Length: 211
Ligand SMILES: CC(C)(COP(=O)(O)OP(=O)(O)OC[C@H]1O[C@@H](n2cnc3c(N)ncnc32)[C@H](O)[C@@H]1OP(=O)(O)O)[C@@H](O)C(=O)NCCC(=O)NCCS
Image (tube, rainbow, N blue to C red):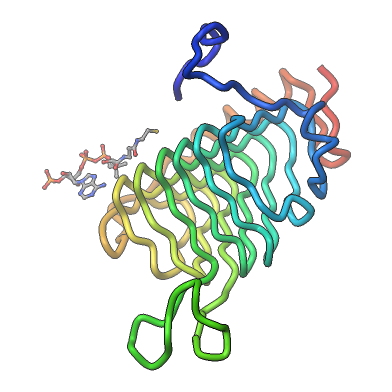
């Protein structure tokens, strides 16, 4: 993950909005320690709920004007990612999207039986709309694409440049187009999660951080 801490004087670096500023912008909810890069484009703020400890990096585009986005705790959305939320997208606790990940919960009909694209009235189109759900600890590699209706089970990871067009089971490492399971993913990270949460004394149930 890029280290932005020394960038304050750099004119190319626009910085991040923090929780306090974000609270007044109209999001459905904003937790503690949320950072969103100032050059992101986000529409449908009222449909977006943000947990605690979230970082959304440069040039992320989130379209939540016609569907919700739920982001859990300790979630990172890498720069240049695109989230199309018409069918609803959930990123559970400890999820990570690397740079340039695209998640579509709505997509045009590519078979030729309907007109397509954003300029055409809805009645001529056959848009597939279905929710996308990423379970806890899911990690998506750079440049990967996730299609509507996909559910990725807890603890699974997806390698760079993969296409996820069907749901993936839990605790696997997957990659490719379409993504296939190559091996099991270790569950050692669960012990680290417990250690982190006990150090931080984070109370997920009430959503408050008591450091
Ligand atoms: C999928 C991944 C996790 C597998 O890593 P790994 O378990 O160390 O596996 P290996 O590198 O040993 O690869 C095993 C085989 O799969 C191939 N492979 C690995 N990742 C691949 C990918 N994304 N797409 C296609 N093939 C891939 C390797 O070339 C290798 O093939 P071979 O057996 O014919 O030599 C890793 O390759 C990956 O894509 N990580 C994502 C990295 C990323 O996006 N980082 C962004 C910053 S966080």
